[in-house]
Image (cartoon, rainbow, N blue to C red):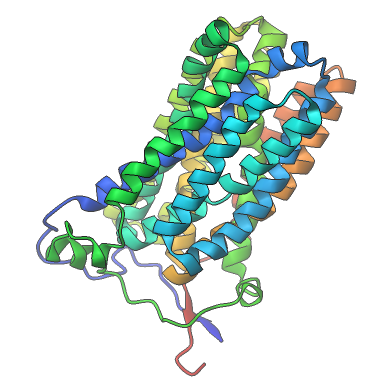
Length: 437
């Protein structure tokens, strides 16, 4: 059986009397940051090329949405199974396999010309990219004590925003000079470069040759997790797991909407075409970077100020949720840059929310099952996101006020999310193996 025990004190673990010597854990965080960046570069290319692909390939909104949904469906499957695979294979091998596979699939997008071909390639990309966050969150749980995990998660998670930022700076130039297939080839190749550094530098902290004894003691200063394995069925019996599943399902589809439809929205409503879409997207995703790091920093700062873990995480989630509320106004304003600002605020808030949501898993779950729980949450979010994307295509194709309806849903989704998380886990409680089991 799994038993629960309260963990509401800000200093839930004993701290070493002397600070750690060495910062290898932050170098590992940098590797995770660049992986997340490349993950989102490969993902964002399709959304940036939306107006060009729809024109050249004669697609409508529903066709684009269905191709996007094929990625999300496969991503959901990949997320779930990759989470379990990371717990079984280990991060070093599992992450390397995922990055190699998604990089090859990303380059393969440049070879196809039909909606069916894109659906296949986007599906292959999604299946492999599903391993990114389960692997990264598991790495953070292995390399950082609880008091640093939200910040570490915020830093690596900001890589997704940087990726979505780098893509609009690369893709239009490559497309204008070499054609849109070259954009897929160039961005997909980045993953193979990352693999060289990953294989050379990554190892578990207890086996890493550069980790000092004091840094290892600091990393492992939290209570030791029990060694028993936990099945998926057993995980699903616990409200802590459902809190994360709900959290992902109500937030990730909104973020994916920004990723895939922001460029199209700004083009259709305000005339930002492929040549001048870069600056608006830069504003949105720089803001998202700031939000990711700020959200991770805020909950850590509250903990240092004496707040309980429960209060620090949930107040940060609430602050982020409130910052999303004005985003519906982007569909009502007449000035394009005001719309960009509202979307940028919402994107920043999402990333801060996401950093703390991911951290809840390592707050409450044994390290051995962190990837599995993240995988379950991502899989659920992927299936919800697939339905949301298909619905988005229908709404935009047939409703005059389609963007207002979708952004209205985005405005309230995070507040509902925080409420449900609090109802499921009124106090953050860790899942522990009962010694009598």
